[in-house]
Image (cartoon, rainbow, N blue to C red; front, side, top):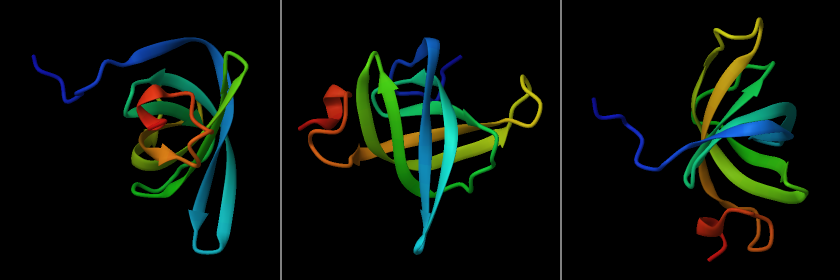
Length: 109
């Protein structure tokens, strides 16, 4: 079976918490999130709030003590089967907020 993923994804072995800041016009919503999976072009995060597909914003994480801040676009959001009330959010990296902000090598050029 051929999967839809083009990039290798990594399951995050420890808890990496952060926040997703979604912009809707002049309104910014800050959502606490947990990073579940990571690849060079996107990630899977979990939140207690549902997020609309195609919503855009900033994902702020701290990975191994290094802050990372990337622009993301929500690709999918669905209720999680694993945890009551949580949502799984698939997000695509659009780029770093600035060239100093991302810990992901593909975004620092």
